[in-house]
Length: 454
Image (cartoon, rainbow, N blue to C red):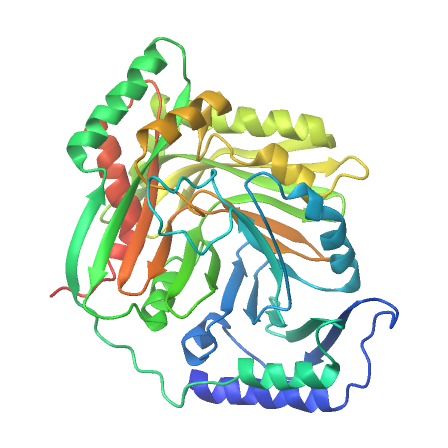
């Protein structure tokens, strides 16, 4: 019989406290303001994400890396950095220092600056935010657990930290998944406006003013009660080939991205990125899905959309890398409901290039913005009536061992009983409004297909 999440969490919690009771001082230099405790615990755990709904703390999150075959569960917040859009470079030196001490840093960069005149659903989110959790639990591909405790000695003593950890580790006695019922659903924009927007972009494409623009749709689903984390866990489980970034920062506010696309994964001086663009639905059988895959690989419009993204990545790699290589060009990635064209590009970085320098060059790629970049972003700002926020932003983890930023697509913002679901479609020469709308529906299936029917 599988152990319940509550039982597994009790085992993990006891192991953490046993280790903390033996700690006398952090492993890094005592003269440093920031302290990092790192220790391993002898607990086997198949999945950290199954523990999310067990924990009662309001500040928690999960980072799952499909490439690294790892998971990180983070709780609380000991150090925070925030700034206006595109102004994160000034935080780089301190973050690099914290990485060297052994801390893990999480957070993200919004897609664009927030416009309060459009909506205020992201009002409690900074345009750039990064933070160091009080406690991070990491699981590697061997299912071993590593615990990292980080704190600022100007704010807390070790005794204070242990008291705070006890609060963060509190859990529910039971974890019942309630059946949520949909009260209302609406799409922004509605299809009529969507069609008009696509036709407007296509006219600019035909005049060679634009090569590609990714237009987004927001679907707001209102439930009869608060959205449960147990349901969000089921959504995560439905896409095993994707990476995950989940962050709950308040009582009723959380962001989730279940994404197939890595903006970049850096280990030492090596770097790897995904180019994902071009989409087709799966078939009703394995044979039909294979036929759809073959169709995707030969579709001129889809290949052109993919090429635009890959070309942009090549330019960045030429700038950042001593050498680089393109592998598995125009491969097909098959997910639960659809397939994408995928190419992986990897390289050896030039000396002294920081994570933020890479991030600034790559984000946003044409996979989520368009080409040329400035003109595409201007078009999006003019045509979309809502703020994307972290949708299509860059979200991830920075650490001494590796840094990985994900492209925050297939994402949602949870606000109390409302699910704000964001999806997008690339508009290029040959795009048709009806087919692109259908693609949006297809990309929404990871979430909407798991909503219980009334």
